[in-house]
Image 1 (cartoon, one colour):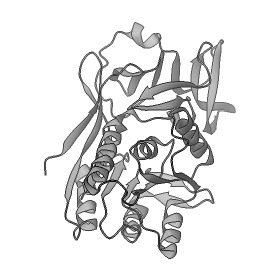
Image 2 (tube, rainbow, N blue to C red; image 1 turned 180 degrees about the vertical axis):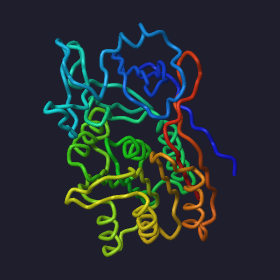
Image 3 (tube, helix red, strand yellow; image 1 turned 180 degrees about the horizontal axis):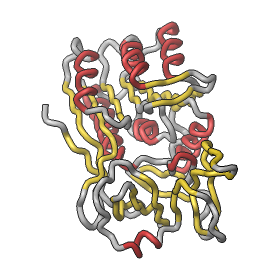
Length: 317
Protein backbone atom coordinates (compact mmCIF):
# COMPACT_ATOMS: atom_id res chain seq x y z
CA UNK A 1 0.00 0.00 0.00
CA UNK A 2 1.32 3.43 -0.95
CA UNK A 3 1.17 5.81 2.02
CA UNK A 4 -1.08 8.83 1.46
CA UNK A 5 -0.12 12.38 2.38
CA UNK A 6 -2.86 14.58 3.83
CA UNK A 7 -2.02 18.27 3.38
CA UNK A 8 -3.53 21.14 5.33
CA UNK A 9 -3.18 24.35 3.32
CA UNK A 10 -3.42 27.98 4.40
CA UNK A 11 -6.90 29.45 4.84
CA UNK A 12 -8.24 32.78 6.05
CA UNK A 13 -7.81 31.99 9.76
CA UNK A 14 -4.76 29.73 9.68
CA UNK A 15 -1.37 29.57 7.99
CA UNK A 16 1.98 27.91 8.52
CA UNK A 17 4.22 30.89 7.80
CA UNK A 18 7.58 29.18 8.17
CA UNK A 19 9.36 26.29 9.88
CA UNK A 20 12.89 25.17 10.60
CA UNK A 21 15.60 24.91 13.26
CA UNK A 22 13.20 22.99 15.47
CA UNK A 23 10.43 25.61 15.38
CA UNK A 24 7.28 26.56 13.48
CA UNK A 25 5.68 29.96 12.97
CA UNK A 26 1.89 29.93 12.54
CA UNK A 27 -0.90 32.44 12.18
CA UNK A 28 -4.11 31.77 14.07
CA UNK A 29 -6.58 34.45 13.08
CA UNK A 30 -4.67 37.73 13.33
CA UNK A 31 -2.04 36.53 15.80
CA UNK A 32 1.23 34.78 14.95
CA UNK A 33 2.71 32.23 17.33
CA UNK A 34 6.13 30.57 17.35
CA UNK A 35 6.59 27.24 19.11
CA UNK A 36 8.91 24.22 19.05
CA UNK A 37 8.50 21.44 16.51
CA UNK A 38 11.04 18.59 16.59
CA UNK A 39 10.19 17.58 12.99
CA UNK A 40 11.42 20.89 11.56
CA UNK A 41 15.04 19.83 11.06
CA UNK A 42 15.76 22.08 8.08
CA UNK A 43 16.74 25.74 7.71
CA UNK A 44 14.15 28.47 8.12
CA UNK A 45 13.21 30.21 4.88
CA UNK A 46 11.67 33.43 6.24
CA UNK A 47 13.92 36.31 7.40
CA UNK A 48 14.57 36.59 11.12
CA UNK A 49 12.51 39.80 11.13
CA UNK A 50 9.39 37.79 10.29
CA UNK A 51 9.95 35.52 13.29
CA UNK A 52 10.65 38.47 15.56
CA UNK A 53 7.18 39.85 14.80
CA UNK A 54 5.48 36.84 16.44
CA UNK A 55 3.02 37.97 19.09
CA UNK A 56 3.55 34.79 21.09
CA UNK A 57 6.60 32.59 21.62
CA UNK A 58 6.82 29.33 23.53
CA UNK A 59 10.35 28.93 24.87
CA UNK A 60 12.01 26.85 27.57
CA UNK A 61 14.03 29.58 29.24
CA UNK A 62 14.00 32.06 32.06
CA UNK A 63 10.86 34.21 31.75
CA UNK A 64 12.06 37.75 32.17
CA UNK A 65 10.87 40.20 29.50
CA UNK A 66 8.83 43.16 30.63
CA UNK A 67 5.48 43.79 28.94
CA UNK A 68 5.03 40.04 28.48
CA UNK A 69 2.29 37.84 29.92
CA UNK A 70 3.30 34.29 30.79
CA UNK A 71 1.14 31.19 30.48
CA UNK A 72 3.12 28.71 32.56
CA UNK A 73 3.16 25.02 31.81
CA UNK A 74 2.65 22.42 34.51
CA UNK A 75 6.26 21.27 34.41
CA UNK A 76 8.48 23.69 36.28
CA UNK A 77 11.98 22.63 37.25
CA UNK A 78 14.35 24.19 39.70
CA UNK A 79 17.75 25.02 38.26
CA UNK A 80 20.48 26.56 40.33
CA UNK A 81 18.00 27.67 42.97
CA UNK A 82 15.88 29.58 40.42
CA UNK A 83 12.64 28.65 38.70
CA UNK A 84 13.08 27.58 35.09
CA UNK A 85 9.78 27.54 33.22
CA UNK A 86 8.43 26.30 29.95
CA UNK A 87 6.32 29.34 29.18
CA UNK A 88 4.44 31.24 26.53
CA UNK A 89 5.62 34.80 26.23
CA UNK A 90 2.70 36.77 24.85
CA UNK A 91 2.72 40.41 23.88
CA UNK A 92 0.28 42.55 25.79
CA UNK A 93 -2.14 42.86 22.84
CA UNK A 94 -2.75 39.09 22.73
CA UNK A 95 -5.99 38.08 24.52
CA UNK A 96 -6.27 35.01 26.74
CA UNK A 97 -8.31 33.35 24.00
CA UNK A 98 -9.72 34.13 20.57
CA UNK A 99 -11.82 32.40 17.90
CA UNK A 100 -10.82 31.03 14.53
CA UNK A 101 -12.62 29.08 11.80
CA UNK A 102 -10.84 25.97 10.54
CA UNK A 103 -12.18 23.05 8.56
CA UNK A 104 -15.74 24.38 8.73
CA UNK A 105 -15.66 24.55 12.54
CA UNK A 106 -15.01 27.27 15.11
CA UNK A 107 -12.37 26.89 17.80
CA UNK A 108 -11.18 28.86 20.78
CA UNK A 109 -7.41 29.35 20.54
CA UNK A 110 -5.69 29.52 23.93
CA UNK A 111 -1.89 29.29 24.28
CA UNK A 112 -1.60 26.72 27.05
CA UNK A 113 0.71 24.26 28.72
CA UNK A 114 3.04 22.03 26.71
CA UNK A 115 2.98 24.42 23.69
CA UNK A 116 -0.57 23.48 22.66
CA UNK A 117 -3.10 26.05 21.46
CA UNK A 118 -6.30 23.98 21.28
CA UNK A 119 -6.39 22.75 17.70
CA UNK A 120 -4.32 20.48 15.45
CA UNK A 121 -4.60 21.97 11.93
CA UNK A 122 -3.17 18.82 10.32
CA UNK A 123 -6.43 17.03 11.19
CA UNK A 124 -8.55 19.01 8.71
CA UNK A 125 -8.26 16.22 6.12
CA UNK A 126 -9.51 13.65 8.61
CA UNK A 127 -12.47 15.86 9.56
CA UNK A 128 -13.43 16.09 5.89
CA UNK A 129 -13.10 12.32 5.54
CA UNK A 130 -15.29 11.69 8.62
CA UNK A 131 -18.02 13.99 7.31
CA UNK A 132 -17.94 12.35 3.89
CA UNK A 133 -18.08 8.79 5.27
CA UNK A 134 -20.99 9.60 7.59
CA UNK A 135 -22.98 11.64 5.08
CA UNK A 136 -22.46 9.11 2.26
CA UNK A 137 -23.67 6.31 4.53
CA UNK A 138 -26.75 8.28 5.50
CA UNK A 139 -27.56 8.87 1.83
CA UNK A 140 -27.10 5.20 0.96
CA UNK A 141 -29.28 3.82 3.74
CA UNK A 142 -31.96 6.47 3.24
CA UNK A 143 -34.00 8.68 5.52
CA UNK A 144 -35.46 7.28 8.71
CA UNK A 145 -32.60 4.86 9.30
CA UNK A 146 -31.00 4.40 12.70
CA UNK A 147 -28.52 7.00 13.88
CA UNK A 148 -24.81 6.52 13.33
CA UNK A 149 -23.05 6.14 16.68
CA UNK A 150 -19.45 7.35 16.97
CA UNK A 151 -16.94 7.04 19.82
CA UNK A 152 -14.07 9.55 19.99
CA UNK A 153 -11.35 8.51 22.44
CA UNK A 154 -8.74 11.05 23.59
CA UNK A 155 -11.11 13.64 22.13
CA UNK A 156 -9.17 16.71 23.35
CA UNK A 157 -10.91 19.95 22.25
CA UNK A 158 -13.33 18.19 19.96
CA UNK A 159 -12.32 18.65 16.31
CA UNK A 160 -13.26 15.12 15.23
CA UNK A 161 -16.26 15.06 17.56
CA UNK A 162 -17.68 18.24 16.06
CA UNK A 163 -17.04 17.10 12.48
CA UNK A 164 -18.88 13.82 13.12
CA UNK A 165 -21.77 15.58 14.88
CA UNK A 166 -21.96 18.16 12.12
CA UNK A 167 -22.45 15.30 9.63
CA UNK A 168 -25.34 13.92 11.67
CA UNK A 169 -23.78 11.28 13.93
CA UNK A 170 -24.43 10.76 17.63
CA UNK A 171 -21.04 11.13 19.31
CA UNK A 172 -19.55 9.99 22.61
CA UNK A 173 -16.52 12.18 23.38
CA UNK A 174 -14.09 10.75 25.96
CA UNK A 175 -11.07 12.48 27.45
CA UNK A 176 -9.11 12.21 30.67
CA UNK A 177 -8.86 15.99 31.11
CA UNK A 178 -11.73 17.98 32.58
CA UNK A 179 -10.40 21.23 31.12
CA UNK A 180 -10.13 19.70 27.62
CA UNK A 181 -13.76 18.57 27.78
CA UNK A 182 -14.87 22.02 28.91
CA UNK A 183 -12.89 23.51 26.01
CA UNK A 184 -14.51 21.07 23.57
CA UNK A 185 -17.97 22.01 24.83
CA UNK A 186 -17.17 25.68 24.28
CA UNK A 187 -16.04 24.87 20.73
CA UNK A 188 -19.33 23.05 20.14
CA UNK A 189 -21.23 26.11 21.33
CA UNK A 190 -19.47 28.59 19.06
CA UNK A 191 -19.69 26.14 16.13
CA UNK A 192 -23.48 26.07 16.51
CA UNK A 193 -23.48 22.39 17.47
CA UNK A 194 -24.58 22.54 21.11
CA UNK A 195 -27.93 21.00 20.15
CA UNK A 196 -26.30 17.90 18.64
CA UNK A 197 -26.32 14.56 20.45
CA UNK A 198 -22.88 14.58 22.04
CA UNK A 199 -22.08 12.81 25.31
CA UNK A 200 -19.14 14.37 27.14
CA UNK A 201 -17.35 11.77 29.26
CA UNK A 202 -14.46 12.37 31.67
CA UNK A 203 -12.75 8.99 31.92
CA UNK A 204 -9.73 6.89 31.10
CA UNK A 205 -10.06 5.43 27.59
CA UNK A 206 -9.43 1.79 28.53
CA UNK A 207 -11.58 1.96 31.65
CA UNK A 208 -14.45 3.50 29.68
CA UNK A 209 -14.33 0.94 26.85
CA UNK A 210 -14.35 -1.91 29.36
CA UNK A 211 -17.51 -0.42 30.89
CA UNK A 212 -19.11 -0.12 27.44
CA UNK A 213 -18.39 -3.80 26.81
CA UNK A 214 -20.23 -4.72 30.01
CA UNK A 215 -23.13 -2.46 29.04
CA UNK A 216 -23.35 -4.06 25.59
CA UNK A 217 -22.90 -0.73 23.83
CA UNK A 218 -22.03 -0.79 20.12
CA UNK A 219 -20.56 1.90 17.86
CA UNK A 220 -20.59 2.29 14.09
CA UNK A 221 -17.34 4.23 14.08
CA UNK A 222 -14.42 4.76 16.44
CA UNK A 223 -11.81 7.52 16.44
CA UNK A 224 -8.73 7.48 18.64
CA UNK A 225 -5.95 10.01 18.96
CA UNK A 226 -3.68 8.47 21.61
CA UNK A 227 -0.69 10.31 23.07
CA UNK A 228 2.67 8.65 23.60
CA UNK A 229 2.15 9.01 27.35
CA UNK A 230 -0.74 10.23 29.47
CA UNK A 231 -2.76 9.82 32.62
CA UNK A 232 -6.46 9.30 33.16
CA UNK A 233 -8.54 11.36 35.61
CA UNK A 234 -7.82 8.88 38.41
CA UNK A 235 -4.13 8.52 37.74
CA UNK A 236 -4.42 5.69 35.20
CA UNK A 237 -1.18 5.44 33.20
CA UNK A 238 -1.22 5.32 29.41
CA UNK A 239 1.92 4.22 27.54
CA UNK A 240 1.32 3.78 23.83
CA UNK A 241 3.77 0.91 23.46
CA UNK A 242 1.98 -1.01 26.23
CA UNK A 243 -1.62 0.20 25.98
CA UNK A 244 -2.51 0.74 22.32
CA UNK A 245 -2.94 -2.89 21.28
CA UNK A 246 -5.05 -3.60 24.37
CA UNK A 247 -7.32 -0.65 23.62
CA UNK A 248 -7.75 -1.63 19.95
CA UNK A 249 -8.67 -5.20 20.92
CA UNK A 250 -11.20 -3.89 23.44
CA UNK A 251 -12.67 -1.53 20.85
CA UNK A 252 -13.29 -4.45 18.51
CA UNK A 253 -15.77 -5.78 21.06
CA UNK A 254 -17.89 -2.63 20.95
CA UNK A 255 -18.02 -2.25 17.16
CA UNK A 256 -21.39 -2.76 15.49
CA UNK A 257 -21.91 -6.03 13.54
CA UNK A 258 -21.43 -4.07 10.30
CA UNK A 259 -19.14 -1.22 11.36
CA UNK A 260 -18.62 1.89 9.25
CA UNK A 261 -15.14 3.21 10.03
CA UNK A 262 -12.13 3.14 12.35
CA UNK A 263 -9.62 6.01 12.53
CA UNK A 264 -6.32 6.10 14.45
CA UNK A 265 -3.95 9.06 14.61
CA UNK A 266 -0.39 8.89 15.89
CA UNK A 267 1.98 11.52 17.19
CA UNK A 268 4.56 9.38 18.97
CA UNK A 269 8.02 9.94 17.51
CA UNK A 270 9.55 6.92 15.83
CA UNK A 271 6.30 5.20 14.82
CA UNK A 272 5.44 4.54 11.19
CA UNK A 273 2.11 4.63 9.37
CA UNK A 274 2.88 1.03 8.41
CA UNK A 275 2.44 0.10 12.07
CA UNK A 276 -1.08 1.53 11.98
CA UNK A 277 -1.75 -0.34 8.75
CA UNK A 278 -0.78 -3.63 10.41
CA UNK A 279 -3.02 -2.86 13.40
CA UNK A 280 -5.98 -2.09 11.14
CA UNK A 281 -5.43 -5.18 8.99
CA UNK A 282 -5.68 -7.40 12.07
CA UNK A 283 -8.65 -5.48 13.44
CA UNK A 284 -10.70 -5.46 10.24
CA UNK A 285 -9.77 -8.85 8.74
CA UNK A 286 -13.38 -10.05 8.90
CA UNK A 287 -15.00 -6.79 7.86
CA UNK A 288 -13.81 -6.23 4.30
CA UNK A 289 -13.61 -2.59 3.32
CA UNK A 290 -10.46 -0.59 2.58
CA UNK A 291 -7.54 0.82 4.55
CA UNK A 292 -5.62 4.07 4.02
CA UNK A 293 -2.52 5.07 5.95
CA UNK A 294 -0.08 7.90 5.63
CA UNK A 295 1.28 11.16 6.98
CA UNK A 296 -0.44 14.26 8.25
CA UNK A 297 1.26 17.41 7.02
CA UNK A 298 0.90 21.19 6.91
CA UNK A 299 1.99 23.20 3.88
CA UNK A 300 3.95 26.41 4.30
CA UNK A 301 1.96 29.19 2.67
CA UNK A 302 4.76 30.67 0.53
CA UNK A 303 7.27 27.87 -0.06
CA UNK A 304 4.91 24.90 -0.35
CA UNK A 305 7.26 22.93 1.89
CA UNK A 306 5.50 20.28 3.96
CA UNK A 307 5.86 20.02 7.73
CA UNK A 308 5.29 16.43 8.96
CA UNK A 309 2.74 16.51 11.78
CA UNK A 310 1.87 12.91 12.59
CA UNK A 311 0.57 9.71 11.03
CA UNK A 312 -2.90 8.30 10.46
CA UNK A 313 -4.55 5.00 9.65
CA UNK A 314 -8.22 4.70 8.68
CA UNK A 315 -10.51 1.90 7.64
CA UNK A 316 -13.83 2.37 5.86
CA UNK A 317 -16.42 -0.28 5.07
